[in-house]
Amino acid sequence: MPATPLRNRSMPANTTPLIQPNAQNQYEVTAEDLPLACPMPQMYLWNSHPRVYLPIVQTGWAKCPYCGAEYTLRR
Image (cartoon, rainbow, N blue to C red; front, side, top):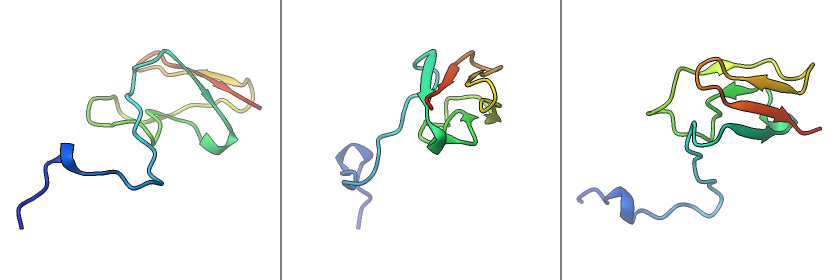
């Protein structure tokens, strides 16, 4: 059976679409996103930088040293 092209494949109903990394400069995250890493697990990795974990719990804010994305922790 030939492989189905990616553009014709349907996504399962419970799958969240991936986020483009570095597409925004600011992201709001919640406790569910901890430990916080940039790029986040929901982001495409092929065109991004190495994953780095960011300390955000104490201050509620963190900035990625690679791409400059800023993260705010929503409490």
